Length: 148
Image (cartoon, rainbow, N blue to C red; front, side, top):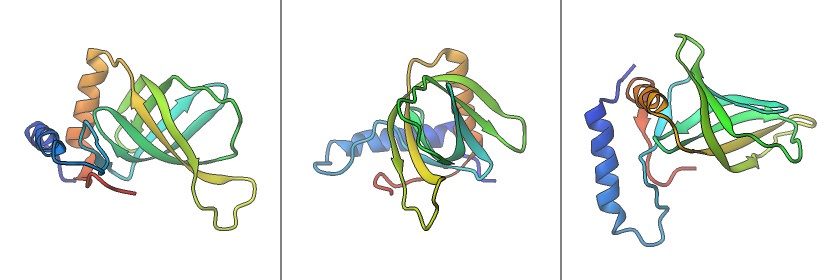
């Protein structure tokens, strides 16, 4: 597994910020996004749970895909990030859901694929350190600034 060093993480972050001034209509992001390795998952906990595979992650948030029935008026305030293979677990990260959209269905009736984007809110120092560790050791590549 290719590791992204802290220096590389910061280099991508600062290069993105400096080139951001030249962007007009392109998407603006404060933090570089990285593709998470295949065994990385996110779990939102509330009255019901949403658990799915992390699609991308940054120091500011993540996107993940999950299968579920849409339940109206769901509220979530924390996410857990974990790996299914080595015991890594970052629990209770405060977050806000930015979007939660249904993806194309391909004939599924009751259960549909969704993509959910989260912004991290006021993480404490220990959570920040674990998040940086995760990005530095458990991602596979840097994603372009425009990615579907």
